[in-house]
Length: 358
Image 1 (spheres, one colour):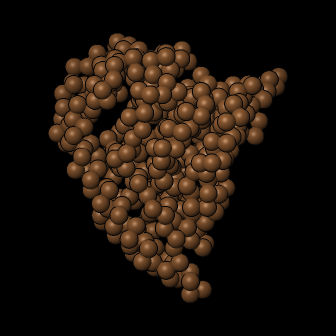
Image 2: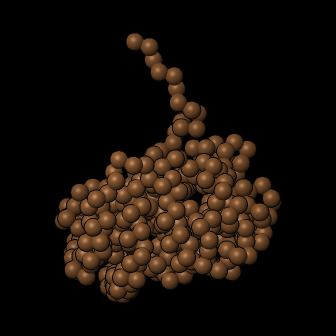
């Protein structure tokens, strides 16, 4: 039997993204909304799908959904692009602005897919680590960008997994310092009530990424979108896959976005529960708790890997970052329903006390 020719060199040593999904009674690892789509919206969706033309191709650019998003943001359709989840749009970012002889600036610790995408398309990666408290090292980033060789930059606000917001004044300075395309990933902005949207009119080199997966309870329906200058959107369209957003997802997205105000009580509850969870975590001995403006909380504690294992044995799945660079001994906890947060605290208190007694 003949052997197969090797894959492209950029794949050598590349570690694919692993969401570390495991079955569990209590899922608090993937930053999903713990609440399903409200029943009244589900009823509307079912009505739309009752006589759905499944035999027809979808609108290639999801223009009905683009129009709804554009109107909500005071923009035109040409300033919006819908994708198959934020993940497709993140890859298209690297595909359109990266490549050999191109340079990407990243500020870890952050979502690992950013760097992986950049390397996959052959880009050089410049990492400017965050400070010990996970703030962006703004001076270092601006100094590096000032050299003039950076092609694209990723800033996440709130940052995943640390929960930290980027300062608007810093993003403005960054946009003014270079013509590099700066993407601000706002996947969790509904939980911070903070956005860089006001900067769009002034800066052609800004693109904002958002998702339906978190606040809108649609992690199982892959929908994300970009807000950007028309010239930037045109470049993204050149590299996107045709029909990447299926017709069913478009229909569900339209129904949800028209009814987005009905998610506000749920979002408010998550924000309230986040603050309660932070306070209760800080009452536990031996746990460092980081402030968060998102729907998750990052903690640092001794024996984090063992704590993760014991939580999982009790049916509670959180995200283990204890071996990740710059996140040693850290776990990320998605905010759950009140009863889920109660169970987590009870389990953590017992596990930490037992480990401390050993």
